[in-house]
Image (cartoon, rainbow, N blue to C red; front, side):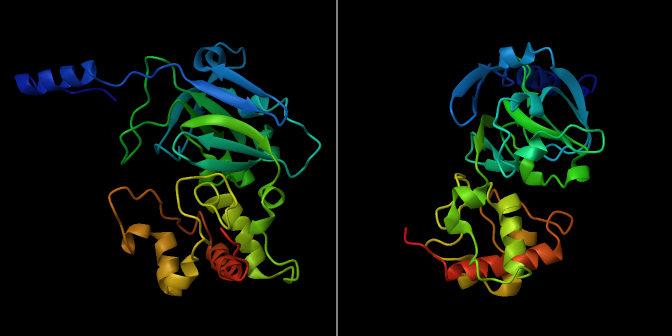
Length: 283
């Protein structure tokens, strides 16, 4: 964005020059890639030097909004060494702030012209990305961005920023059986839809019955479940717009509009939470 300085405004000019002088500089950063048997450590410079690194244009950027351009490498190339025999395998993108996206590995590997395509955007040393809206830090050092996200149902939780590690892991349901619903539930029970919504949207920040690796939000069944202390209407309102129910200075939970969690998915999510009260495990 160009900086405009009004003529004759010496104080404003000095302020701008000072802000440029002390602006944060992006530093080289490590990224670990774990394929289940070994851990490979790479760094910013090595990623920027890859022959498949290009500049990509991302429309409707989830973290920053609007259109942005990044130096990036294809996500499918970074996970090419991951085992391919498990159709339910997951790419866990772990962030510096405790966020841990659980991205279906098949989605991370997609690259066709009619499908979503993931990229690992790389913050170059000396060229820090701007601070995220409402935050004091940017999306670097690494940020998973998507082309054509709507083509494959990419949720906003799969736009993981401040990424520090990419890991090959089993599907969440296999990795953490304590988060699954009772096998006796009918196939069309809304709690089953709610489990899928929880995995795709909530597990990046929350655990349930200790299941998960995220550290941003509280466990949603230990020691209590939100359905035990929220009235149903208040819980729906909280998920749609947390600040409309309660807010605090360090609140991190965003709201989820109907285009992010449909009404049917929201009903299913609440049914899942209600169901999990009876499946609470000891801490």
